[in-house]
Image 1 (cartoon, rainbow, N blue to C red):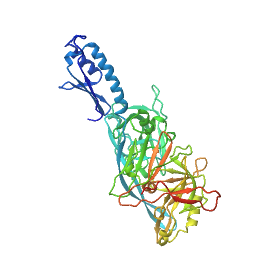
Image 2 (cartoon, rainbow, N blue to C red):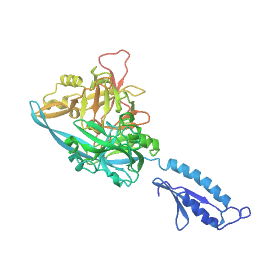
Image 3 (cartoon, rainbow, N blue to C red):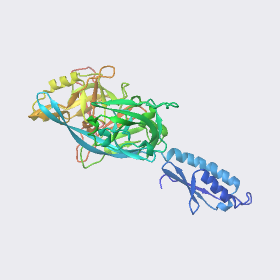
Image 4 (tube, one colour):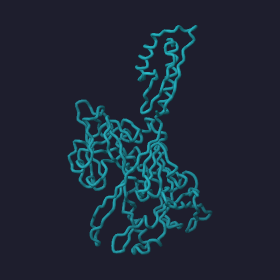
Length: 472
């Protein structure tokens, strides 16, 4: 039994309080009225969420009215404390990895095959709960699942939410407002890269493991075939900052934080490319066993709603390149790609002299210097194998796609799964900051993070040292 508290109720002094056997019936009625359930041995179980508080009454036949009143005052204090603490927890969900092949035409090289990777887990929506597999996406803000009314091929190949089976569902407008009397609820259309969905909005129970809250979500009524029909998962659970959601009632992290069910207002992501270890997302805490270094916190910059941090410079190994100062990096768990401004990507290709794949291992590490609130910047780097890809005929190019986001939201890099497999990330919803640590993978020797050291006189190179983040 989880979160159990014991309350022993003793008979009062019979010289002061007269024993009244009929109080037993009264006590049981009071307990029932307070959601307490009596067992045959006169133990009483009080339900608080998924936890139970046990109240043990001893010698009930010798309890007076006054002792009953005192008992309930004490019980209320204990139950109030239990309600505030027993539900404070963390929840970890295992993530399943799938790799999908996508063929596209490349000018001059013919058709090429891209491997798109996704990690997803299972949540519940509605009462009674209906299961859905979703990508936990830090690059979007809303929970979207296919609806029973959706007849698109993309919906038909996935589980669909049946609102008729949910007992407490409410229709809402997609800005979070109530639907006016006699009016129909509105619809919303959201674009995802090459595809789009249209849907209606509802309020119902949303559960991530044992962490539950009532919140708003989108139930799609139409989904484009590309790319949704090829997805192995049913929907998307957006975990971007609240400003990217339709309203605060659509932000699942905001709902979980406000309802007080999480131990801490954070979530953390561990992604592995190996079948020998489990990828997972944890709500309410971070896990030391996934970190090969201390966690380095960096404040979120910009107001676009992404978990993005500012870049101080780009490095080749230990050499700053004076490229894209003031750019930002958005950490995106919902994409398998790395992307950056086309002008910077072109300059990197020129400086790295990409072409023949035979010299990939001789290329430098590609690093991005980020600064926390205290101390010198730390460099988050990618190895040559992580930032290059073979396009055929022994030719390699930079794996960063062109992504031109105009100011004030850009210039912007987007780091997806290849980056997140290397770094364990923690997202602090309350303080708007991202924590980075070298991910600890089975049978792998973690790289050492580098720290940019300040120099008295600026020169072409800043001095670097092994970061305190690297553990022995």
